[in-house]
Image (tube, rainbow, N blue to C red):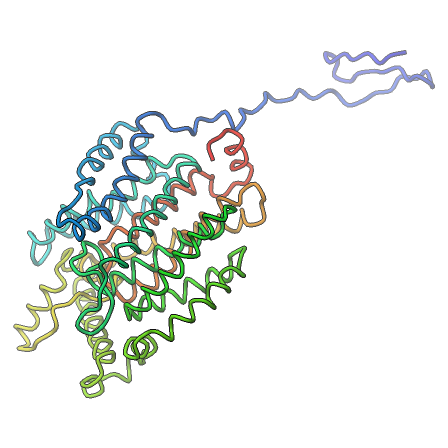
Length: 465
């Protein structure tokens, strides 16, 4: 006798074929309504968001285009004007303008902006602080929110990564064509918008190195070749800058990549080739890179006839001044962009002379100019981004379907670690590097659901990766 199912009865009785007895079985449980498939969730970009994404990519490239045309033809390309207007219009009409605030990183940046605005009215030079914020907030800080608003899925995150690969190529091209040594022999790009100083060039190079390594991890031989060439050229120019902060940041980058990369042998081969550059460096540059004295051993006498020690002694004294200013103005600081002005004021009072330089330390720069609350938020955005990438890497490293996400997070992780180290040697708190890198991190975390492998696979199936 065939079994007869009666779902309306709590305990169905079935007649056993062989025994002729009735058997009681558990009731049939009503299944819940099927969940909406992840692939049905709309993560594709609408028309306005697509315009915003590609305009934003053009905007990122436009700065380097201006640098190239300024040196080659004596004038700017002005692509940033066109791209910038399109980005703002698309951002307002995208419907995703507040997406950056869904991330803890975005909340840190928003809080940082609030403290900058609060600090300006109490600045020791109000007009100077307001002038700095007038350019910094819309053109630099907002890059974080633009990134999150337009990079809605994994495909758009990859497009931004590739845009930064192109930016890296532009930096290297500009350095190769127009770079030169300064009066002390340190390599820089004269009259460059971004890389006029050796330390600026070193920071730009080391923070773009991750994008070259991203290409090295691709399957395409052409991509691997491009990545290898960019890596070697970057190392060459980086060493020529003689930047000790850049050199330490490079060391941190290589350590991170050696620990977490899935292709360590490629890095090893490139490292062997890069050793050849050491032999062609000028002796003064090489000694500068390796001559890092402990702060306690530095004094005026030891720095008189040694340019490297003099530079480090000067940095140490400026750092002490910055810490003193931060302690004296702990809540809102001196005011954004006013550290050098307060140095002058103190020199007038003390009848001394201090070099009119910045703090040479981004963390001291924020603490002294904006206060400790702003510093904590700045650190939250930076190290929160590093931790976010680490979590994504941990979840996706061994997942075959999520390897592209792993490579992107590794690229950003290494770049941010390098930036964190380099920031201890240069005042770069108001530069676009950190908003861009943290914005890409937040966008990748939102697009991948913090490295959720199942979500990533569903996005790939839906064509959004």
